[in-house]
Length: 86
Image (tube, rainbow, N blue to C red; front, side, top):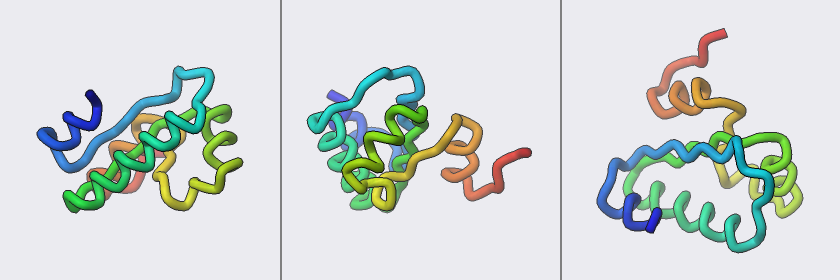
């Protein structure tokens, strides 16, 4: 279902995963697919995460491919091309 949003929606998307407790290989696979779709559309996928999700992404060495952000404000700034507010 979320893949359909990427097909029909805006090229730039922020996905907020900051409240989830666990992500498995299936979830990581979907994130990779969504990031590829965003790139194909000349857009960006910014993923708001938490330390637990970030740790899992780093464990499988996807942190350089997936654009992880610590909070929504930083993700918005990345998409808009601005510097995050301090």
